[in-house]
Image 1 (cartoon, helix red, strand yellow):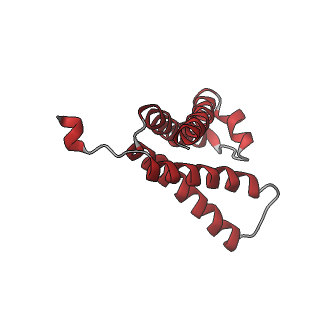
Image 2 (cartoon, helix red, strand yellow):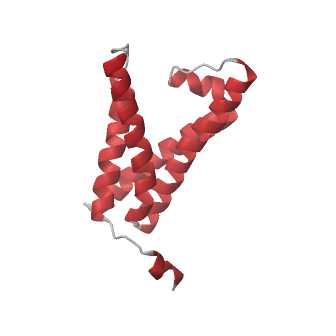
Length: 132
């Protein structure tokens, strides 16, 4: 079970790394995938910075946590995707559904379930152990 979870997390981390690189290199093209378009140069800069940070940090923590079998590293991306999923659910209630609304929510829900399951299953490394 651990092997399957760590493999899934590593593969999802590769997907997120691809998303981060896509937003860093070509935010306008990458934004089309998520139906996001910049408004002016400031919007382009914001897309490049924020989406690269979101997906890049998530990918780094997921891949490093899976590689090191460290459950603590999986909390950061788990919380990132849980907040994103919650915000999408709020939007669904407040604004209503739109074409294709389920796909990003399913991707985020997959991340949340797999990351928190692995967090529960993998060992946790305390700071005292790392410092020693």
